[in-house]
Image (cartoon, rainbow, N blue to C red; front, side, top):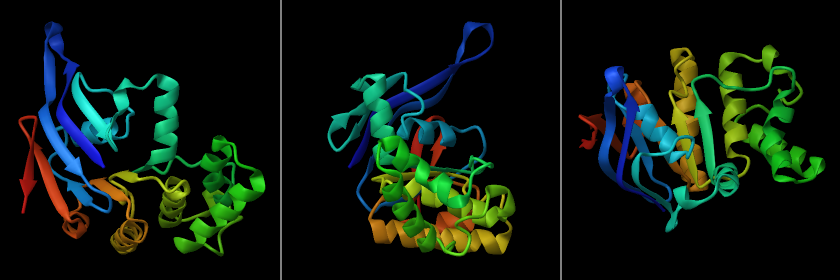
Amino acid sequence: MVHIDALSKSYPAAAGSRIEILKGIDLTLSPGDSLAVVGASGIGKSTLLQILGTLDRPDSGRLYFKGVDVFKMNNDSLAKFRNQSVGFVFQFHHLLPEFTAVENVMMPVLIRGDKRQTARRQAVKFLERVGLAQRLEHRVTDLSGGEQQRVALARALILRPAILLADEPTGNLDKQTGKRMHQLLIELNREMQMTLVVVTHNPDLAAMMGRRITIADGKLVELE
């Protein structure tokens, strides 16, 4: 479903030079795959995730989604693709604090143009699935850190994206809350048959993924 072909990315450095982060990498992901990207900070894990999510563009190479080279799309088409096909969960939840849990989860459906009643019905369904049936009308500031991350997960999944990208999704949670979040990610990956890519320093979460990779000198390395 997702195929990266000879993808490279660099960033400007001092004196007009550039730092090569990704060097001609290849990667193929199928529906239902789960992949952990692990390793030290600064090796390019989040850069890879942002390119997979089309939040950043490579210097060269291609990203294919179901056979379509997505970076050939214009900006409007790319934004539509991202909204409909990719879900994001970050270390910081990026929820809107002035709104309730259900209102936050409704947002992607409303942006798509669906009616408010439809958006609310779907939001309630996903919040129930992540265990927040009793917290629908609570504002973000009244939720615990684990509850906030579950709201962010429900929001990421409400449009049933083909791929879910998670960057340190439990980095701000305590150990027990993090474990529950890990299990929820795995359950939803299996239930929805979505492709799951997680950037993490957490060895327990990485061990739950079907595949583990790291980046060494700009190249992808498969781990056992």
